Length: 133
Length: 177
Image 1 (cartoon, rainbow over the protein chains, first blue to last red):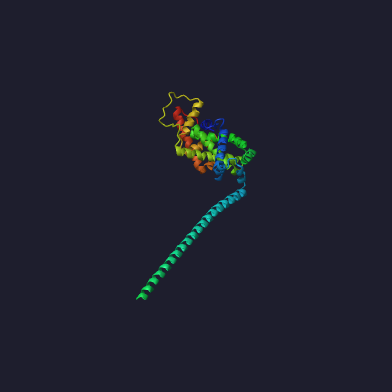
Image 2 (cartoon, helix red, strand yellow; image 1 turned 60 degrees about the horizontal axis):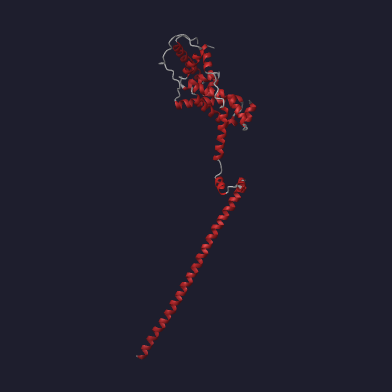
């Protein structure tokens, strides 16, 4: 081995990083895991935390089956409430239509009676004038 | 070491930290000897170990671990140097000659050599670093750098020739090489 080889080995010997190097890597790994967990948190958790600060419902949401069952029940309740509201609106509109229909029928009845009376009077006047002639 | 690797692969943080301690001199040394910048070398070495943490499942043995670390560190060093054009300590031909031509003490020669190595082109610089820091054979360097063995050999030959000429000129006398 030449002198230059030996000198290069000395010049390019391994170097040790700062003492806490391994600890800093461990901290970066922990930080990365925490960030990944935060990123992968389900979308519904913050909503649930806001609506349910005591978190008894959260435990129910942890099991996937229970979560879907709760979501199903909530969806049914929302649909039933909305459906009931729409049905009541429909019934109200139907009742109003019936009233309007009855009023129109009554108005037509009055108009018809008045027309009949007027017709009768008109026919009476015509027959009286023909007799006098 | 096998046991350490197996435990680290199962998520044992302490075992992984021990693995880091066992190899940090090699990884940080390669990065520092190549980049000549402590902060940059430390950041790169940390990234290499974080990458190792993610790829632990694919590491088959301690030998494979060493090979993997050398390969990833070398390639990242070359990438960083190419991106940032790191030439921290320029040592050009215009550098003033020393006042007297007597032989420098060895620490001075080491410092001179480190600065001279830093002036080599990216590829040959890594070849020289792996050869002299890790004491690797040209065939091993070729595998790590994905380079033909003959290219490694010619890089080494040419680099040594350049270093010999420059160190002789700088020290003002013929160095027995």
